[in-house]
Image (tube, rainbow, N blue to C red; front, top):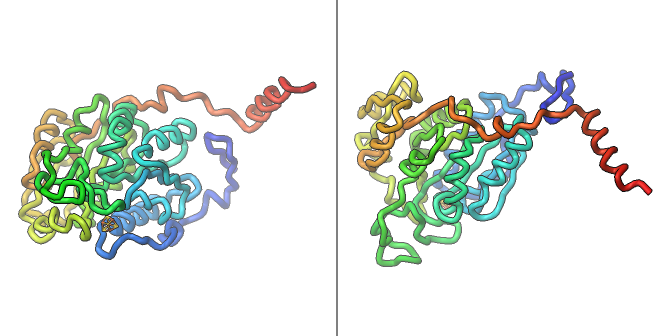
Length: 317
Ligand code: SF4
């Protein structure tokens, strides 16, 4: 018999369970055919299988948007929240239950617009969880409105003559936040790189921010079309302490040696959009995590029952 930090006791035969891919498959995904979200879902289910995460100890949190349907498609706990509020919900879960594996899935409208303040502060709080920004450069669920990451000049329903402003850069924003501890970029159309990045993000102790370049064939079919067809437009960040993906290095032949401990170099490299850089920009495992600073020693079941009885006794007549 073993006991989780929350006091839940597990029988030995529960600890010995092994999980198959199907143990993580929730409802059938309703995204459009060809949507890049399918690729991320597959990689995530594969990761949970490889890491043998207990479904009852795993939580997916989302806000609103196409990608925010993610928790419905995982057979774990999930919280499909309100627009832009995935991160405070997830931070609260992690603070109360640090033993859980927490994943957050947001789109670019969710994270970079209405949720932008939460994004900045979650990076600074650095709770141990994986945060995915599925960036397709548009509001897809509400049918084609300009988002903060829409490329300048791209028409939408809200800006039919083309997006007025230069696109916000989620990497430079994240790398500019004090206490950010893990910032990476990958693409759902490079599945091996996507999987390796998710695995590195999961194993990092602290908030892992991963921008996933994601195709939306309905509203922004052009923004990654060239990069999908021409590997020469993609540059891999390589380093022995980075995220090695040797099986694709022969296809993506542009490599840039980058030490992920070098924050200043990471910021400089993140400024460029051309070529598209995939890899680990920055990682520092020694950054403080909010749940460690604020942790209250877990109580046993007996202690919790005694506290509950004492509380109830206050109202005894
Ligand atoms: Fe995916 Fe775009 Fe369809 Fe939304 S609208 S499900 S992002 S392809």
